Length: 237
Image 1: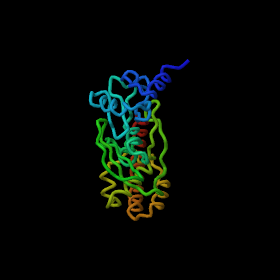
Image 2: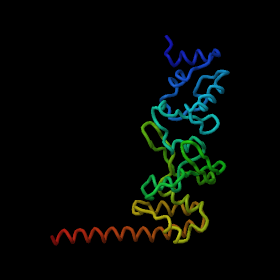
Image 3: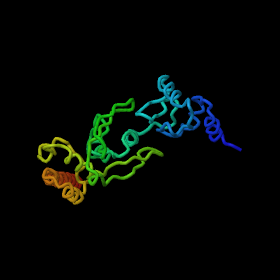
Image 4: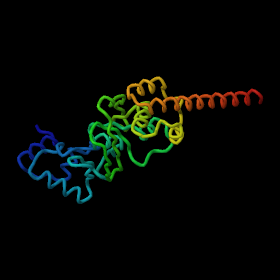
């Protein structure tokens, strides 16, 4: 006996047009879906265009869609959208630094690096920017569950920092490091950053690492002083 889902596939494969309700039954659990996730039929491209025009679907790029409220069961996380818009990419730079608690304010656009072409993607789900990076520098990211059932590629805090320095001219100057207003610097692994900087083989990365090390020591020192003052105050009560 065929399940409802399999019965739908069988019917569409014989050229039948699918209704929106039948499509929802197939893709409702997917925050994002491609045209290929629906059964192939002569009417599929026309139906998708109609559902986009009627406000039922987001069209994010050619072949990539998301259900609009109230039809979607789970809104796609921006990092997942960023990954799917450009396949050979991971979230890095300011967005990943904010995710790791290193920046107080999120950037206006989701920032990623890619081995493909750089560019800007504006969608109904947000703005996404992509910076090009060499294939041999495309490393130190992990797949993180950013929302229940949604996994995205996100750079480590250290790689996000080094990517930002590497891709920003004159970023090695201490003033630029200060302008980032980084927080929680004590959570960064400086040895890891130095190792990445050597692999990048760029002078400004080394300069930025030295500047960041100074800020790191200052941040840790400030916390030690604050803790000492707190303990002294308590002991005197």
